[in-house]
Image 1 (spheres, one colour):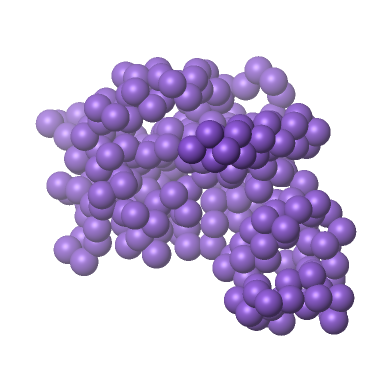
Image 2 (cartoon, rainbow, N blue to C red):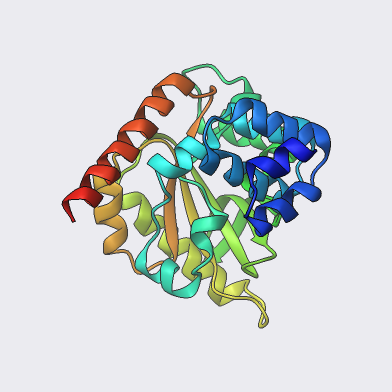
Length: 254
C-alpha cells in the first residue's frame, strides 16, 4: 500500500480515503486511471457509494469521470435553489448497457427492462435512491395520470419522478413533468418531505435546447440522457484533453 501513499504524499484527505478501500480497489484505480484528478475522483466515489470491486470497475469502464467533467449535469434554477447538492446526486447521462436493448425499442421495453434490472439501475443512480413504484398513479380532476418510475432520495428527502423518452428531448416534455410534480406535492408528499424532483431521461438531447428550456422552467427538474452501450473511451479522453487545453488557454488569457 505504501506506493499509493507516495502518489498522494502531502494530501491527507486522499491518504485517508486510501485506507478506507481494499488493496484491489486501489490497484484498480491506479492501473486504470491516467491522471491524478481521475484517481481522486474514483477514490472519493468508491468510498461514498461503498462500491464493490466489480461496481467500481464498471464505473471506470463507463468513463464516468470523463463524462462528469466534459458534460456536467444541468438543472433548473429552482432545483439549484432547493437542492444545492443536486449536481453531485444526478448525472448528465446514465449507462444502461445491462438492459441489452436493441437500437430500436419502445418506452415500455425501456421501462420494463429497468424494473427487471432494478438492482443494477439503482447502482447506476446512486446508493441513496429507493424505488417506490412503476406506473405510479396520479388522480387529477377525475382523470388518471401515470409517472413512469417513482423513487425516493434519502439524502434530499424527496420523491424523484422519472419520465422516460425514447427520442430527442423536447421542451414541452418539461411542462408535463412539472404538472406531475405539482400533483405529487399536493396529493402524495408527506409533511416531513421536501418538494418533489423530476428527471427527464431521454435517448438524446441538444445541450443548448436543454439549457434554454431549464432556464425558464419553474419546476425542480433536470434532463439527462441514457445510453444502451458503453461509451467510446478514446473519444471521451479526446474530449477531456480538449476541455483541459481550452481551460488552460482561458486561464493564460485571464
